[in-house]
Image (cartoon, rainbow, N blue to C red; front, top):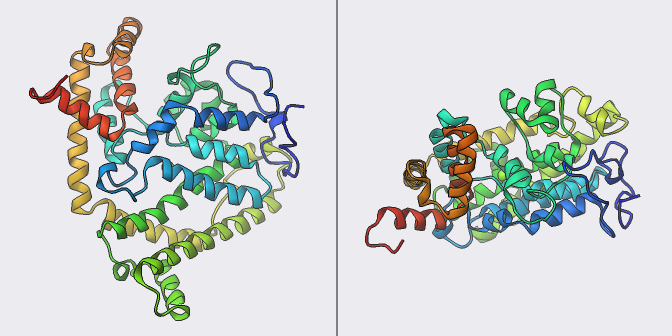
Length: 390
Ligand code: MG
């Protein structure tokens, strides 16, 4: 029995159970007084990559304002939403929290602009994908333990971190990539963390977009979902000041979708009645989901955000700058790995001997992807501005 403090009490049979984990890449004795997934979560919180999330952009660059989401506050919101749903469905709340906190560990600086730029730089060398990089961070890059590289997380947590994966890469990854080869599903906690991610960013990007003045509440009311909540709120609280009104609308939107996911998934689970997590994995189709009409409403919101926030000229100006910074950094380090800190330079030498330029590019990508926004800006200045101290 390794569940620790009754961590498995009250779990549904199809939830992830500590005592039935598929285990870790490097076998370890069961933890004392903690469950296996608690240990995963604790290791994630103690990692360097997790602390760096505080200075990585979600949509708005870190120095633009203190109230915008960063990758860390985004990850906390994902965890919060996922835990509420997990508890109501008797799923493993600790595992879903661990996956949520780890899901963006491999993200580059400067949000999606950074990911796109680095992927472009890595085109000839196997590409760059932040999901895969999150897995690489927890499997290889964190250096904290004497007995193994990375954080040596459980299979269930790694499965959740690897949300999607192209086939050739999946074949290289072994156990955790197998489901993409076999076209099967992940466990429910992994499905849930993925959906909670989407719920979190759709809603907080509304808040951040309003705060930045990129959109107004009136414009947002073109989206039927927002309009419905705005009308309901105005009829009960006609005099509410704008700031409170916005938060009240967003609160209602999150609450509604969370309740829908609990009900819809509950029905799907009752109908499929999987006897355990392996039956969930073998089941065709997702078992954690929104109802179709709710999904359609959220899609409309997503499209609005894409056009009016993510493609707003102020955001585009920032993302084009970010792109140039990352491309320049990548080019400089690829041209001369000695410009990187010693441990990266040494790693480049070792890996290049075995894998050639692809190996060099991978280490450069690790270094660049690991940077926070402000570190990337500083490093860019130090490399390209002769007046700057090196
Ligand atoms: Mg995310």
